Image 1 (cartoon, rainbow, N blue to C red):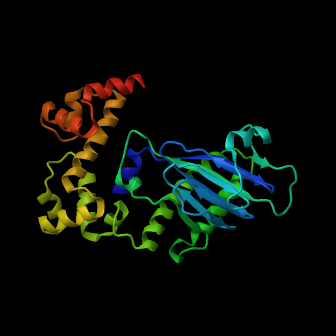
Image 2: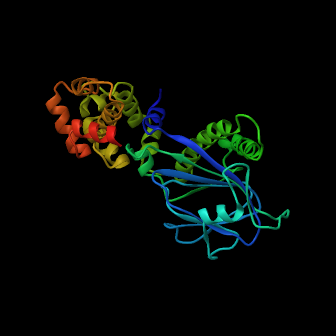
Image 3: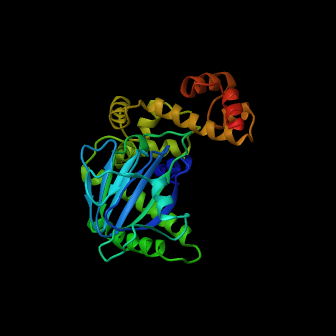
Length: 311
């Protein structure tokens, strides 16, 4: 498994499909903030203005546009910019929407209605990683963008078709498609913007990526900066310098943070003793593991396990 897949696996990355819409003008709906999610809206008919809390101005989406709002912030979807909005729960009540079928808002329907496919990508709030932290306030893609992503149009349109159908397995299909679309969308965004920081930028560096992949393939090994640099075919100083430029972490900070995230996972599952957790992630003694865990997570391992079992 490659490093990106391992990160998404640890973060419990999972797509959740909300609904397909049919909005008749005038309409303006405020979507509330919600923990660690990346919301998405794909326009299949009409147009849609989007204004999020951390946007300077509303953005106009047209047919074929996909917007991803990575950090779960509140935002407004509307047929006109700066119009007064209705909370989503109130819109559900007014439309008598019960969570199944098309979310129809507005009494009159026409060929000019706005149709969207909406959902989110959820990350377990107990885990953190630079992959998510470095994402921008929003990413807008059109289905026709990028020759290397030409298949995206067919994928998005198939997702929209399935979302508006009432067939067995529709939700599962949408979830799988949207997960692929999300991953490819953020990869395209990094390439298009020429970003020189963040986890994907580090993976695009042929040398740094070798060090990262080597670590993720065996994160419990006795890693040092020298050993990681050797895998990257770089000097120790240059590897450490470039690594920090990408992730704003030293190589060993990244190593410790990743190991502690895995420790959190094992402690939450409550299958291994504290000694076993320590040895599994590469610590020879429980004392050194406990010290590193508390410094990183803010609790000792036993306290963390109890808090997770009571949650």
